[in-house]
Length: 400
Image 1: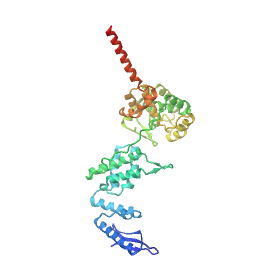
Image 2: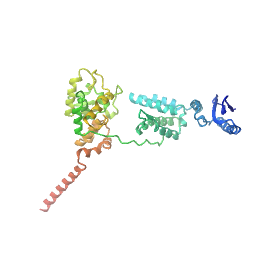
Image 3: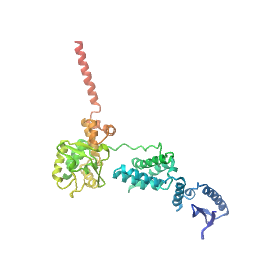
Image 4: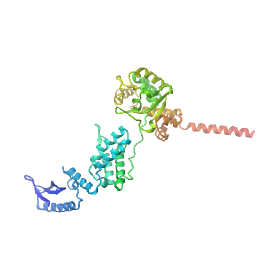
């Protein structure tokens, strides 16, 4: 039976009761008066009824209590035992152990980080079958309020979506195994802004190549004219350079200091060397071939650290040359837009970039083609004009 008391030296009322076989004492904001005691007695009656029925929520009555998380965890554990269903934490870890064999190391680390940093603190002890759609939506809304870094930036829509993906997969699998309605069903991803494309013009490319440090000239020339990802060029080894066939074979990448498989199945590819890329790699061969397995490496023969290169080479070069500030990934976007502007086959460009279809190519880059060719539909106009001229010529011959 719960009781109402006051502590020595205080006139604030507190409730002394038992929950989950533990003694709980929670202070209220009510001063000890007959009226407040009557008011608190009614609250206690409701609490005890809810405890008896198994629907009591500690957080509802004492949201600021130090015991709140502990008592909620005990309640969740009891529900799990009674329903013979795992808690979110137990199922999430089981799911991860079953799925990790399908993923490469970098993706495993990413998913594990999301589970540990975001999902378990929110859903950890909760029986997985009682998680509702409102809980999922509330969690997503809370992510929009998370800040990071010295500038207190908010998580982007893309980052929030990436956090929600494993949550959706976990709940979907659990709903199948325990036969409950999937609370993630019909929840759409947040709309993400289009990829920030800031390609270099051909003139800017040569300005950069001719202005960058000589020991990085070959590196950036290859980046600009092949469209390789940072992880691909930094993980490029001499065994994957075929000078006879004039091909760069992509079958590995350097991610967080480790050699891993390429990003996707389509990323396994052979990139054709243009004459400029061929000459750059031949020049690089004379520099690093005998002292490192990596085509582009540090003075010790170790692979490049892209953060260090960005800080010491990329951004300072842009600044000195008066070029617009942008990230180094724009070298990949530049290659795609230059190829398109030159009239190369979209299918060929997609294969060089490591895309499975041309859809991404057109969605991402096609709007830059008119700007770079300065044609804006003139090719179609020329086609129609030629057709009209041919038709006119035919009509003249017929009339004669």
